Length: 173
Image (cartoon, one colour):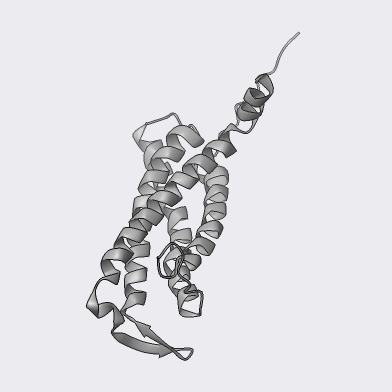
């Protein structure tokens, strides 16, 4: 038991990031799924907008984009709170630091969010439109999500919640 506890302490940040990353992904996927179920029931989702690479592109791609953006917003809100408090343990709620962290977090997530917003519809449009769990194009959503999670960790660890090095004090003998 002590060995497990020591391993948890040693890898706590990564373990917590994985746990909250999975929960953030679930928030994103649940919101996306609910919206796609709502949009999918719309009769106008089959209206053809244009043809790309020999495929008819319907209103569905617009709905996929909207669902991706709304799901991203829900995920970012959830992720910022959980990453600040439990993953990177940024204890300060001083307004200046909080706004800096929030701004950097949103900026980094915008970068990966753009990848998600356009990546999922793009992969869907070029043929990764397989249904998974009864959701149209969910395979594309999963592929993009894996890439986004890895990049989000790198941005959070190295830029947003970077720990400041403690100044070393000289010891005199």
